Image 1 (spheres, helix red, strand yellow):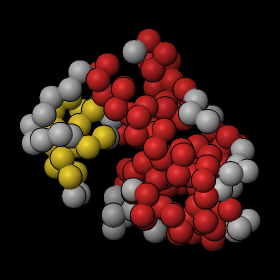
Image 2 (spheres, one colour; image 1 turned 135 degrees about the vertical axis):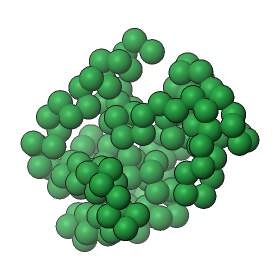
Image 3 (cartoon, helix red, strand yellow; image 1 turned 60 degrees about the horizontal axis):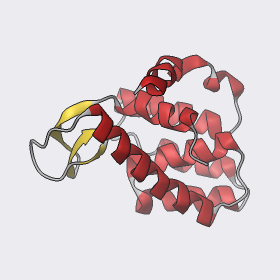
Image 4 (cartoon, one colour; image 1 turned 60 degrees about the vertical axis):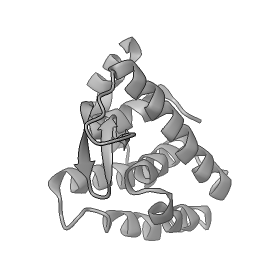
Length: 151
């Protein structure tokens, strides 16, 4: 269930970086995807293709372990998995599959890189979506959604 809303959500967090930069443990460019090599430069159209491929991989993982999610739950977990990796997100996905969303939310909020403001905000939005707090789904990523439609 890869929707334009999900892609726009991730784009709103990641931003576009045409030239690869070091991000935690890998070279990253585009919309947060792994670069092929240091200083690799990508176009927005190539970045979009890579984003969609990577999101599809994360979505497949989430669906495999938690097949009965609504759109908000799915989007929250896929965004989280996109950011922290499949290994790190598995515990939260399994907790949601077991009906333990508050516990999953608590685990997700631990992934903030020692209180990085951007990651704290991202985890709040993701966990609010997961917990079905409707105010988080307001147009926080509307401009990215509109821009994504014209990419």
